[in-house]
Length: 253
Image 1 (tube, rainbow, N blue to C red):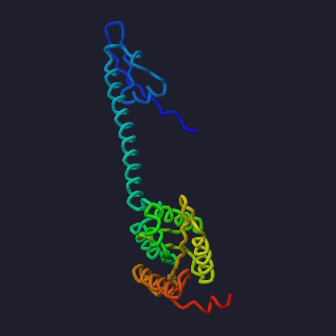
Image 2 (image 1 turned 45 degrees about the vertical axis):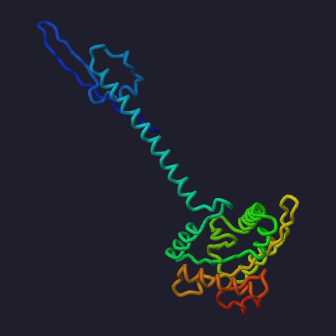
Image 3 (image 1 turned 180 degrees about the horizontal axis):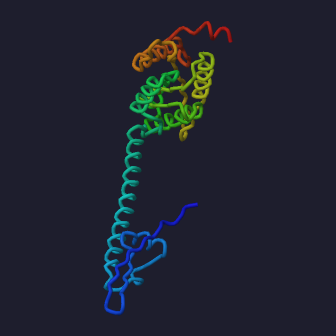
């Protein structure tokens, strides 16, 4: 239980012949006394300089309160600006800048992860045939699918027109990653209705895994995942490949 602050009094004693005048004041304890006894200006004599002190204290409190409010607003504005700077405006996913920072943080903290590059197949045809409004709608639909297949600690970023990077934190099992990729690709192959148009796409993906590298480097891992992605495209699209050979693990499960 919080105790009320102690209040100290100061006194001045002035002898006047047969009488003695005693003057009491709160001195430096005025602020505590006002708070404890709920005092106001009316409780003090007009000539008491305490009234002036109360005004100064009230003004100081008002300034401090406004300063705290301003700092909170500035902090909220700063966080909002940082969020905008790291967010893809079209899809609401993280952007390349946010993805790069997250990769660096994971590597610095030695947290294992998988880095999956994904590129949409036949997306250019959607833009060319139905227009960019249809393409934007499909990209937002893709973002919803990718978000639904990941966790809060994972990173889903749009790094280009129809290019995405997914970072799976503490996920290094190639069999599990293969299943995730196949499930996402299957979901992305489901037709998307936009107005009177039916938009059909697929996706190709490639993945690098941090534990495959003695000293993981974000640029190297992204480059390796990108090469694996294009190996998937070359193999017929709508597929997933690993940067390193994990075929033996996949064949055993």
